[in-house]
Image (cartoon, rainbow, N blue to C red; front, side):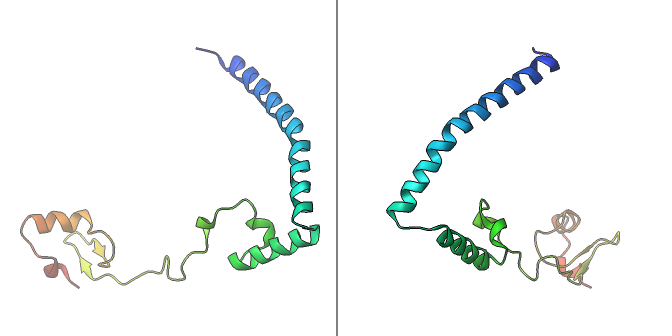
Length: 120
């Protein structure tokens, strides 16, 4: 097994290789983008306008939208809102009745008691 110094040396070599590959491919990528922009008659203003529109759809500034997934959308307004407890256990545990049944209540139900007997 390699020691820390060997691993750090490998990391530096790999980072250098990645940097070289990126710089080699950068020019080709820019040429491809420019070719597509010319083919579709897209200007820089078109791109700026498109990113602003995308940002408005997500409710965030356009600069934060690029590179983010759509799955990271806004949270619901009710998320995290506390709800009053509907059930209380013998040791003071409480449960709102939402979500999975807590272990303390599941255990008591398995022992033959009813959920309603713990209603507040």
